[in-house]
Image (tube, rainbow, N blue to C red; front, side, top):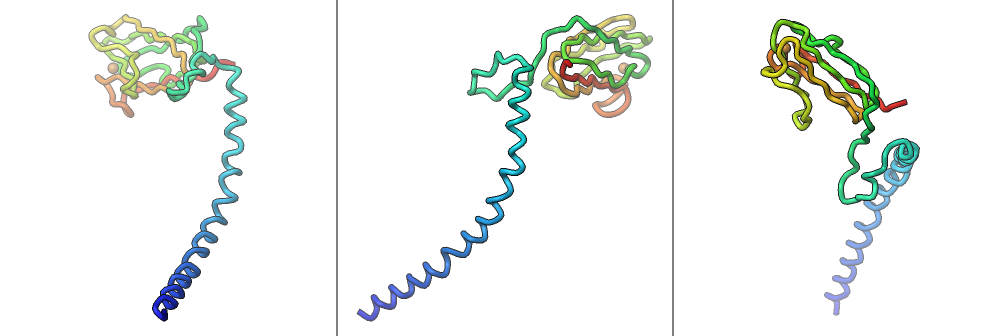
Length: 166
Ligand SMILES: [Cu+2]
């Protein structure tokens, strides 16, 4: 009988001393911070939705893809010289066709830095005088380079900066 009483007292002590304290200290900081920082996000998403095309919206099993825009008929030219792209950083609206012209005396190539992208042209095809065109339909920054005269971040490099149509 005495043992049972002691055990009961010990359990009561353990329960009383451990449970409340950690909960109090964790609850306070978490309660305030997240709502303040997350509140603006839904507003931005909702505001931009009507502008874009919503063909992919119903499929909720796949992450939302980048927004794409139809070709707009505009073209912009980049000259591939020996050994630089002119102009090096070109800003266009989504839907614009970029046309690279090899205006040099040497072969060049055009390789996107992002290896998952499929546009570009190899040196066997992009000989002096050759042209290569690609329509950029997705807003973003697309760095590229010539692998013969540069690396992904130095030498003969360029970038297409694609903005959302106004
Ligand atoms: Cu080159």
